[in-house]
Image: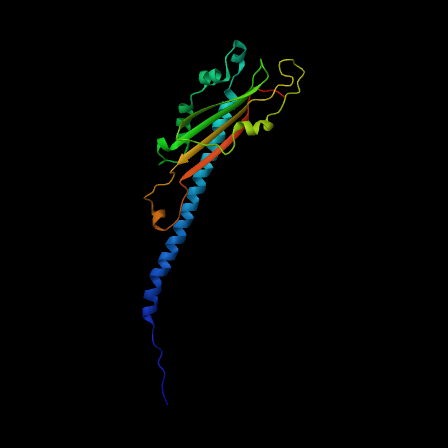
Length: 198
């Protein structure tokens, strides 16, 4: 008769433990990187909306009656570099100032000729909008008011495109785990001019 003795497999736990730790680290770093990506994109979206809203509410085209062009009106009222600096302060810390870019586009109906003309200004990193403001002209409503100055007038559209290049540090721990984070984030917002009356 043979007696079986239970043998302890102490070596198995010492081999599996490092793999469990590495697996947990990969999961934690993955969750943290997803959170950082979503947080940065959310801040970018809210900042682009804020900039478009500011320009749409404050843009005053009454100077066009004095013969000023759309470009002259924009230059007189807004500085793209100042708006970009405001946007950079709203974004998460750690993003270099030179990596933040702003493209501001305004589409407006000329009161004299009735032609709808675009103008744009940019500052910082090169931002390319997914769609130009001309392609969004269908979003601008036409006034139904009886006043001669407003009847049939198309609303002014404002589009702000905000982009960030290299939003995440290249030497971060996320590179070690193999997670590929985007090298560029972009957001845009379109608003109807605030001085327009339906």
